[in-house]
Length: 285
Image: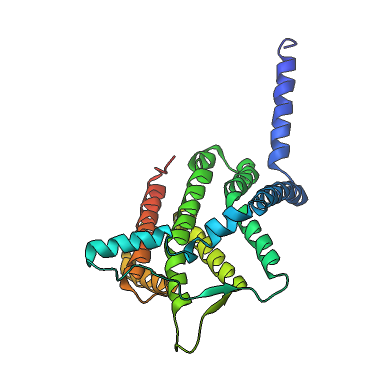
Protein backbone atom coordinates (compact mmCIF):
# COMPACT_ATOMS: atom_id res chain seq x y z
CA UNK A 1 0.00 0.00 0.00
CA UNK A 2 2.82 2.36 0.81
CA UNK A 3 4.48 1.68 -2.53
CA UNK A 4 1.38 2.69 -4.55
CA UNK A 5 0.40 5.67 -2.42
CA UNK A 6 2.32 8.27 -4.49
CA UNK A 7 0.73 7.01 -7.71
CA UNK A 8 -2.71 7.16 -6.09
CA UNK A 9 -2.09 10.72 -4.95
CA UNK A 10 -0.93 11.71 -8.42
CA UNK A 11 -4.08 10.27 -9.99
CA UNK A 12 -6.22 12.10 -7.44
CA UNK A 13 -4.49 15.37 -8.31
CA UNK A 14 -5.13 14.82 -12.03
CA UNK A 15 -8.78 14.07 -11.33
CA UNK A 16 -9.07 17.27 -9.28
CA UNK A 17 -7.50 19.32 -12.09
CA UNK A 18 -9.85 17.69 -14.62
CA UNK A 19 -12.86 18.54 -12.47
CA UNK A 20 -11.60 22.12 -12.05
CA UNK A 21 -11.32 22.49 -15.84
CA UNK A 22 -14.77 21.03 -16.41
CA UNK A 23 -16.47 22.95 -13.59
CA UNK A 24 -15.34 26.46 -14.38
CA UNK A 25 -17.58 29.25 -13.18
CA UNK A 26 -19.39 31.63 -15.54
CA UNK A 27 -16.82 34.37 -14.99
CA UNK A 28 -13.98 31.89 -15.56
CA UNK A 29 -15.51 31.08 -18.95
CA UNK A 30 -15.85 34.78 -19.73
CA UNK A 31 -12.22 35.36 -18.79
CA UNK A 32 -11.05 32.44 -20.94
CA UNK A 33 -13.19 33.61 -23.85
CA UNK A 34 -11.76 37.12 -23.52
CA UNK A 35 -8.27 35.71 -24.00
CA UNK A 36 -9.32 34.02 -27.25
CA UNK A 37 -10.98 37.23 -28.44
CA UNK A 38 -7.90 39.31 -27.66
CA UNK A 39 -5.62 36.94 -29.57
CA UNK A 40 -8.01 36.92 -32.52
CA UNK A 41 -8.15 40.73 -32.59
CA UNK A 42 -4.35 40.92 -32.45
CA UNK A 43 -4.14 38.53 -35.43
CA UNK A 44 -6.61 40.66 -37.40
CA UNK A 45 -4.72 43.87 -36.61
CA UNK A 46 -1.33 42.39 -37.54
CA UNK A 47 -2.61 41.15 -40.90
CA UNK A 48 -4.52 44.42 -41.45
CA UNK A 49 -1.30 46.41 -40.90
CA UNK A 50 0.53 44.14 -43.35
CA UNK A 51 -2.24 44.75 -45.90
CA UNK A 52 -2.16 48.51 -45.23
CA UNK A 53 1.51 48.70 -46.25
CA UNK A 54 0.83 46.79 -49.46
CA UNK A 55 -1.43 49.46 -50.92
CA UNK A 56 -0.68 48.68 -54.57
CA UNK A 57 -1.65 45.01 -54.30
CA UNK A 58 -4.61 45.79 -52.07
CA UNK A 59 -6.18 48.42 -54.34
CA UNK A 60 -4.71 48.48 -57.85
CA UNK A 61 -4.54 44.69 -58.17
CA UNK A 62 -7.42 43.42 -56.00
CA UNK A 63 -10.04 46.09 -55.27
CA UNK A 64 -9.80 47.87 -58.63
CA UNK A 65 -9.19 44.66 -60.60
CA UNK A 66 -12.83 44.38 -61.81
CA UNK A 67 -12.63 47.96 -63.12
CA UNK A 68 -10.14 46.97 -65.82
CA UNK A 69 -11.46 45.43 -69.05
CA UNK A 70 -8.63 42.86 -69.05
CA UNK A 71 -9.82 41.38 -65.75
CA UNK A 72 -9.72 37.56 -65.72
CA UNK A 73 -13.51 37.16 -65.54
CA UNK A 74 -14.10 39.46 -68.51
CA UNK A 75 -11.52 37.57 -70.56
CA UNK A 76 -13.24 34.26 -69.79
CA UNK A 77 -16.64 35.68 -70.75
CA UNK A 78 -15.21 37.04 -73.99
CA UNK A 79 -13.64 33.68 -74.87
CA UNK A 80 -16.92 31.96 -74.04
CA UNK A 81 -18.78 34.42 -76.24
CA UNK A 82 -16.49 33.66 -79.17
CA UNK A 83 -16.94 29.94 -78.60
CA UNK A 84 -20.73 29.90 -78.23
CA UNK A 85 -22.02 32.78 -80.36
CA UNK A 86 -19.06 33.39 -82.71
CA UNK A 87 -19.30 37.03 -81.68
CA UNK A 88 -18.26 39.44 -78.97
CA UNK A 89 -21.64 39.90 -77.29
CA UNK A 90 -20.25 39.20 -73.81
CA UNK A 91 -16.94 40.97 -74.30
CA UNK A 92 -16.40 43.99 -72.04
CA UNK A 93 -14.93 46.72 -74.21
CA UNK A 94 -15.18 49.60 -71.76
CA UNK A 95 -16.44 50.35 -68.27
CA UNK A 96 -19.47 52.61 -68.13
CA UNK A 97 -18.39 54.59 -65.10
CA UNK A 98 -15.51 56.41 -63.44
CA UNK A 99 -14.54 56.36 -59.78
CA UNK A 100 -14.40 59.60 -57.83
CA UNK A 101 -13.76 60.77 -54.29
CA UNK A 102 -15.62 63.75 -52.85
CA UNK A 103 -14.49 63.55 -49.24
CA UNK A 104 -11.29 65.07 -47.86
CA UNK A 105 -10.43 61.96 -45.85
CA UNK A 106 -12.28 59.56 -48.14
CA UNK A 107 -9.32 57.75 -49.66
CA UNK A 108 -7.48 57.38 -46.35
CA UNK A 109 -10.66 56.10 -44.65
CA UNK A 110 -11.22 53.54 -47.40
CA UNK A 111 -7.58 52.47 -47.12
CA UNK A 112 -8.09 51.69 -43.42
CA UNK A 113 -11.44 49.97 -44.03
CA UNK A 114 -10.16 47.72 -46.81
CA UNK A 115 -7.06 46.86 -44.78
CA UNK A 116 -9.26 45.80 -41.87
CA UNK A 117 -11.47 43.64 -44.11
CA UNK A 118 -8.36 42.05 -45.61
CA UNK A 119 -7.03 41.33 -42.12
CA UNK A 120 -10.37 39.81 -41.10
CA UNK A 121 -10.46 37.54 -44.16
CA UNK A 122 -6.85 36.41 -43.80
CA UNK A 123 -7.26 35.78 -40.07
CA UNK A 124 -10.47 33.78 -40.50
CA UNK A 125 -8.80 30.35 -40.05
CA UNK A 126 -7.02 31.54 -36.92
CA UNK A 127 -10.27 32.96 -35.50
CA UNK A 128 -11.95 29.59 -36.04
CA UNK A 129 -9.00 27.85 -34.38
CA UNK A 130 -9.29 30.10 -31.33
CA UNK A 131 -13.03 29.39 -31.19
CA UNK A 132 -12.28 25.68 -31.40
CA UNK A 133 -9.78 25.92 -28.55
CA UNK A 134 -12.42 27.63 -26.41
CA UNK A 135 -15.08 25.00 -27.14
CA UNK A 136 -12.89 21.89 -27.02
CA UNK A 137 -12.60 21.51 -23.19
CA UNK A 138 -16.40 21.38 -22.91
CA UNK A 139 -16.75 18.60 -25.51
CA UNK A 140 -16.67 14.88 -24.93
CA UNK A 141 -14.15 12.63 -26.66
CA UNK A 142 -16.82 11.53 -29.13
CA UNK A 143 -17.84 15.11 -29.93
CA UNK A 144 -14.21 16.11 -30.45
CA UNK A 145 -13.85 13.20 -32.86
CA UNK A 146 -16.91 14.33 -34.83
CA UNK A 147 -15.76 17.95 -34.95
CA UNK A 148 -12.26 17.09 -36.15
CA UNK A 149 -11.40 19.02 -39.30
CA UNK A 150 -13.90 21.79 -38.51
CA UNK A 151 -11.35 24.58 -38.91
CA UNK A 152 -10.01 23.17 -42.19
CA UNK A 153 -13.39 22.57 -43.87
CA UNK A 154 -14.90 25.84 -42.64
CA UNK A 155 -11.89 27.85 -43.80
CA UNK A 156 -11.84 26.07 -47.17
CA UNK A 157 -15.53 26.78 -47.82
CA UNK A 158 -15.09 30.39 -46.71
CA UNK A 159 -12.17 31.06 -49.07
CA UNK A 160 -13.93 29.30 -51.95
CA UNK A 161 -16.88 31.60 -51.35
CA UNK A 162 -14.60 34.64 -51.23
CA UNK A 163 -12.99 33.69 -54.55
CA UNK A 164 -16.38 33.02 -56.14
CA UNK A 165 -17.76 36.34 -54.94
CA UNK A 166 -14.70 38.24 -56.13
CA UNK A 167 -14.15 36.63 -59.52
CA UNK A 168 -17.76 36.06 -60.55
CA UNK A 169 -20.38 38.00 -58.62
CA UNK A 170 -18.51 41.26 -58.11
CA UNK A 171 -17.32 41.90 -61.70
CA UNK A 172 -20.68 40.95 -63.22
CA UNK A 173 -22.58 43.16 -60.79
CA UNK A 174 -20.13 46.05 -61.08
CA UNK A 175 -20.23 45.97 -64.85
CA UNK A 176 -24.02 45.95 -64.99
CA UNK A 177 -24.75 48.50 -62.26
CA UNK A 178 -21.85 50.75 -63.21
CA UNK A 179 -22.87 50.96 -66.87
CA UNK A 180 -26.64 51.07 -66.37
CA UNK A 181 -28.22 54.37 -67.45
CA UNK A 182 -31.76 55.66 -67.38
CA UNK A 183 -30.76 58.29 -69.93
CA UNK A 184 -27.68 59.21 -71.94
CA UNK A 185 -27.90 62.62 -70.31
CA UNK A 186 -26.74 61.09 -67.01
CA UNK A 187 -23.18 59.88 -66.56
CA UNK A 188 -22.11 57.44 -63.89
CA UNK A 189 -19.56 58.81 -61.46
CA UNK A 190 -19.36 56.22 -58.71
CA UNK A 191 -18.21 57.37 -55.29
CA UNK A 192 -15.19 55.48 -53.99
CA UNK A 193 -16.98 54.65 -50.74
CA UNK A 194 -19.93 53.15 -52.61
CA UNK A 195 -17.70 51.02 -54.82
CA UNK A 196 -15.48 49.72 -52.02
CA UNK A 197 -18.43 48.97 -49.71
CA UNK A 198 -20.24 47.13 -52.49
CA UNK A 199 -17.38 44.85 -53.50
CA UNK A 200 -16.27 44.21 -49.90
CA UNK A 201 -19.78 43.44 -48.64
CA UNK A 202 -20.73 41.23 -51.58
CA UNK A 203 -17.49 39.24 -51.49
CA UNK A 204 -17.49 38.76 -47.73
CA UNK A 205 -21.20 37.82 -47.69
CA UNK A 206 -20.58 35.18 -50.36
CA UNK A 207 -17.85 33.68 -48.19
CA UNK A 208 -20.32 33.41 -45.32
CA UNK A 209 -23.02 31.90 -47.56
CA UNK A 210 -20.62 29.12 -48.52
CA UNK A 211 -20.57 28.12 -44.85
CA UNK A 212 -24.04 26.57 -45.36
CA UNK A 213 -22.84 22.92 -45.11
CA UNK A 214 -21.14 23.67 -41.77
CA UNK A 215 -24.33 25.28 -40.45
CA UNK A 216 -26.38 22.30 -41.62
CA UNK A 217 -23.93 19.98 -39.89
CA UNK A 218 -24.53 21.57 -36.50
CA UNK A 219 -28.32 21.84 -37.05
CA UNK A 220 -28.44 18.17 -38.01
CA UNK A 221 -26.24 17.30 -35.05
CA UNK A 222 -28.73 18.77 -32.58
CA UNK A 223 -31.72 17.36 -34.48
CA UNK A 224 -33.17 20.63 -35.76
CA UNK A 225 -32.64 19.81 -39.46
CA UNK A 226 -32.65 16.47 -41.25
CA UNK A 227 -31.82 15.15 -44.70
CA UNK A 228 -35.38 13.87 -45.19
CA UNK A 229 -36.86 17.34 -44.66
CA UNK A 230 -34.31 18.88 -47.03
CA UNK A 231 -35.06 16.31 -49.74
CA UNK A 232 -38.81 16.72 -49.28
CA UNK A 233 -38.59 20.50 -49.65
CA UNK A 234 -36.01 20.49 -52.45
CA UNK A 235 -38.37 22.11 -54.94
CA UNK A 236 -39.06 24.98 -52.56
CA UNK A 237 -35.33 25.33 -51.97
CA UNK A 238 -34.82 25.61 -55.74
CA UNK A 239 -37.25 28.55 -55.87
CA UNK A 240 -35.53 30.26 -52.93
CA UNK A 241 -32.12 29.71 -54.50
CA UNK A 242 -33.33 31.13 -57.83
CA UNK A 243 -34.60 34.26 -56.07
CA UNK A 244 -31.35 34.55 -54.13
CA UNK A 245 -29.35 34.13 -57.35
CA UNK A 246 -31.39 36.92 -58.93
CA UNK A 247 -30.76 39.23 -55.98
CA UNK A 248 -27.02 38.54 -55.82
CA UNK A 249 -26.61 39.01 -59.57
CA UNK A 250 -28.50 42.20 -60.52
CA UNK A 251 -27.60 41.66 -64.16
CA UNK A 252 -30.71 40.54 -66.13
CA UNK A 253 -28.49 38.20 -68.12
CA UNK A 254 -29.67 34.57 -67.73
CA UNK A 255 -26.09 33.32 -67.92
CA UNK A 256 -25.16 35.37 -64.84
CA UNK A 257 -28.08 34.00 -62.83
CA UNK A 258 -27.26 30.43 -63.84
CA UNK A 259 -23.65 31.06 -62.88
CA UNK A 260 -24.82 31.96 -59.38
CA UNK A 261 -27.54 29.32 -59.15
CA UNK A 262 -25.24 26.35 -59.82
CA UNK A 263 -22.89 26.76 -56.82
CA UNK A 264 -25.75 27.68 -54.46
CA UNK A 265 -27.72 24.60 -55.45
CA UNK A 266 -24.54 22.55 -55.23
CA UNK A 267 -24.12 23.77 -51.64
CA UNK A 268 -27.68 22.69 -50.88
CA UNK A 269 -27.05 19.18 -52.20
CA UNK A 270 -23.77 19.03 -50.32
CA UNK A 271 -25.62 20.05 -47.17
CA UNK A 272 -28.02 17.13 -47.67
CA UNK A 273 -25.06 14.74 -47.86
CA UNK A 274 -23.63 16.26 -44.70
CA UNK A 275 -26.96 15.77 -42.90
CA UNK A 276 -27.09 12.14 -44.08
CA UNK A 277 -23.61 11.43 -42.73
CA UNK A 278 -24.49 13.05 -39.41
CA UNK A 279 -27.61 10.90 -39.14
CA UNK A 280 -25.64 7.76 -39.92
CA UNK A 281 -22.88 8.70 -37.51
CA UNK A 282 -20.38 8.57 -40.37
CA UNK A 283 -19.19 12.17 -40.29
CA UNK A 284 -16.36 13.26 -42.56
CA UNK A 285 -13.12 13.12 -40.57
